[in-house]
Length: 389
Ligand code: TGC
Ligand code: FAD
Image 1: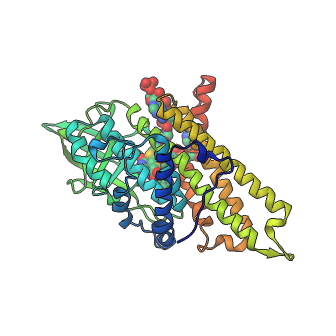
Image 2 (image 1 turned 90 degrees about the vertical axis):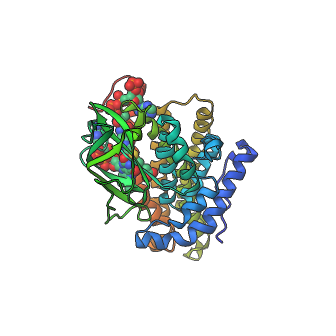
Image 3 (image 1 turned 180 degrees about the vertical axis):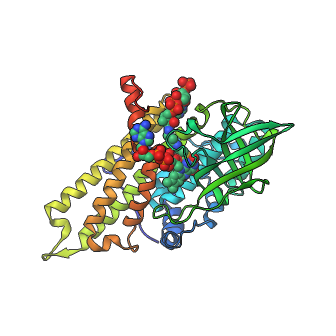
């Protein structure tokens, strides 16, 4: 098993509770034992390691902040963030799976669903006995989901859905899709189950990023769903945007896990690679690179921890989540690129995790609100001027 002791220059460990440390260490061991040995093969083959789903469920990684009465671990948001951080140290695809299941499927069912929907879906999703996906993005509406054209219409005691979603994580393997569609002009959430006539979820192929993640289209052609499958408390675009707040929070932590992996790889390599009769770690330029990487990781860790504490107190703003997602993903990507330079030619090999993380982060930079969109969300908050349109 690969040994990983963490990256913690400012002893942020001392700011964690015993339970938070236990959760982090459990996920860290899981990633070292179960993810890292197999992930490169899945990445090459373009497959998601589905056998990990039940294990993640058993360990309480799915929907971890939700109540225990639905079979969830009922942890705080810092512990949830640490789970995402450690999973993404393995690969962004594993964190993506868990953050979609937790933040984009279980959260909306818990927040906008009926008691029957919660009792039916949450325990299954928590255990990993069922998989969910979240359909917001459409072929012609990515950054502006409010322009969506997917429609639901009433027909007797059913809803009929027509339209298409694109770029949907977990789509093809999902038992239930949380689908956002306009009903009488208002965005509402609907639960569409796998196998419903008129619903297909073909996998998208040809990705050079997040290759170990399932990404799909969702196609609805006169897809009839029972009226009880509407999320009764969903109302307007704000509902899916609230879900994004949960998943973006997890991404902010996940990006730090990815950066820890590439920094650790570069540091170890620099200490053992000899050129001009010295380890390359002994050259000033290499040290400058490593210092930059570690400083940015440390700043991102502190940002995440304070954000998590605010979220646990119910005092955070979604614009702060935007800042953490925007900053941490940008620096994780830059850190991966610098790590690649330290590894020289070896940096492009799958034997090291660096290039895989770098390619993954290109998607992470774009999904859950692009870097530019988060700039505009924060810009709007601090100036009072909306610059989206
Ligand atoms: P706007 O007028 O700004 O907002 C409508 C209402 O929603 C509120 N709101 C939020 N509430 C909670 N959390 C957030 N993050 C929120 N953002 C906005 C807002 O206050 C307002 O409330 P109210 O009470 O005033 O009505 O709406 P807009 O149409 O102008 O939105 C603009 C914009 C750009 C902010 C928004 O549409 C946006 O965030 N676009 C980016 C789209 C995006 O992030 N898509 C992600 C799809 S899912 C995904 O990528 C999953 S990848 C997962 C993985 O594999 O890990
Ligand atoms: P566009 O919105 O077309 O943007 C293209 C470029 O224009 C970007 O650089 C953007 O920043 C810029 N731009 C757009 N508007 C503005 C503006 N107003 N001002 C300045 N610049 C602007 N979606 C889901 O619903 N569910 C999922 O599970 C999901 N999983 C995904 C998995 C992967 C691997 C990927 C790559 C995407 C996933 N997405 C998912 C979709 C993702 O959320 C969208 O790709 C993202 O929101 C951006 O939309 P777009 O790709 O259509 O880009």
